[in-house]
Image (cartoon, rainbow, N blue to C red; front, side, top):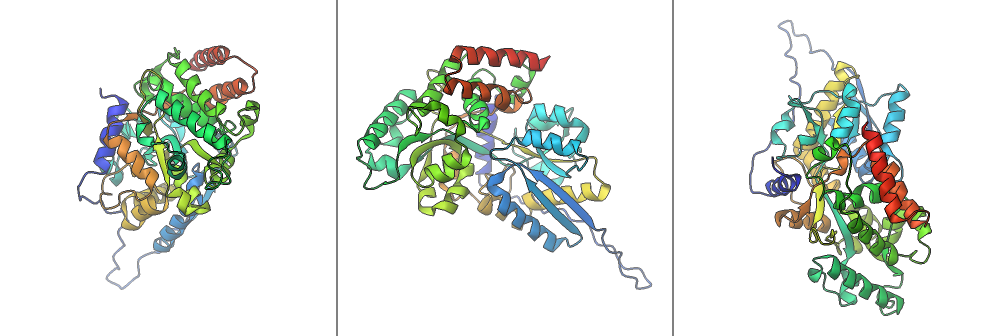
Length: 449
């Protein structure tokens, strides 16, 4: 079986290959008037409730919903977004338990499929399935049935401000492994502290900002660099009863490099209060810091703060020291699932909305030009990413310099609630790194029982 890395790399190359096949959005046929001249019956009024995690597209998704409603006037769409600093999985569980169930919601990979199987509508017959890129459905396929639509394809690494690097005389092209990254960060840090960049960047305080409050940043995304070298795919992680954490020292090196050259280098416990907005909107977007561990999804938010800064961003690799040093993780962040507990009309409307959003010309414009997504389907060849971070992910993928996203196969809650919390304790000086790893290993075993 192909490794996830090869699958994702191939998938991304297919995205940007020159093909022209387009898939029309599905729409129900209108009834034909009877011989007596009767008008067709009015379509049933439907309310569609969406519960989604991606805060970065909350406003744009609302706009897409209004555009869909204009074409389908019998459908009313309500959207609730829970993400960023909030635990979407926990919020979804609470939402379901409240008895007010959404018709469309988000799931991760194989672990979420198992957890939510009782609520998942089989989507195998949907038109978009034939357009899915190779490999993107593997994590949501069980016994040959497909239970969700991929949100998009994303990549993350160390997002950096090219203008700051140029002013510091650092050539980012030479950063190809941990040693070259470390040397560049130390040089940048020394020049910031010496005030050499203050004239051009008066807000610049540190090389990095670390959003340790966001345990998905540390416990999911950062850990994925090391664990993707242990597990070839999320399915392998999902099947694992225990975890060796072979490359825990490499993960520690990445975390230490950021923390030691952050705005809270002398008081690392304070990193645990740094959230996404502080890291991105009040961090790299205002040039208070030069580097953040994030992905192509931050472009729209940075652009809303300062378009010039957004257009000066690029992505450095996240090197796993001594193992895989020139790559970034690339994968599917989340999937759209249709709740099988809805009415027939709600399920039909939910499916139609997804087909419209991902396969109609208007929907595809939202996906690429307003959401700034890298699409998971074919048929987007005329809509390549225009933003620099999307282009950076494309560059890494086409070069084959990617790591799989295996965190979708972690035990439910392990990444954020266990490992992410242990990393917070480590930053606060409450546990040694070895103890943090051991605690995470023990919890993995317990959660797999």
